[in-house]
Amino acid sequence: MPRSYWLVKSEPSTYAWSQLVRDGRTIWDGVRNALARQHLAAMRAGDLVLYYHSNVGKEVVGIARVSGEAHPDPTADDPKWLAVDLEPVRALAAPVGLAAIKSDPRFEGFALIRQSRLSVMPVSRPHFERILELGRTKAPR
DNA sequence: GCCAACGTTGGC
DNA sequence: GCCAACGTTGGC
Image (tube, chains in turn blue, brown, purple):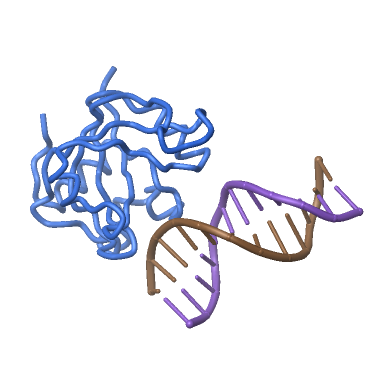
């Protein structure tokens, strides 16, 4: 199975990229949306995840890796809600802003633009690689 | 099962 | 602060 690519959103005031770097690993919990839940369920260890700061920043700031597959969210009453384990891989040398993504025709169809409220979404390989290119960052191995 | 009202997210 | 998008809730 080739690895998949994803994007997760977080408000910096809630849980910033820098906090993930400090923690070294986190449980990505609190997701209460059916479609986002499906995406969490499809994540596999080793998948790469773009880390997007919503509201403040509005930019992709780093790359994380799925370190453990979906499991029941310990913060949820209902065990159907899932969480995954994430660890930081590296920051983008140049954060990629939403405006840059919107103005780049190569991002046509990107869920970040299409479904602005979705907090966990799949990213196609070309889109993932384009983010890294704009972010002046090499893909992790 | 439909749909109006309401709440939340997140960009502007 | 406003509002568009969209998910959820509850009356019927």
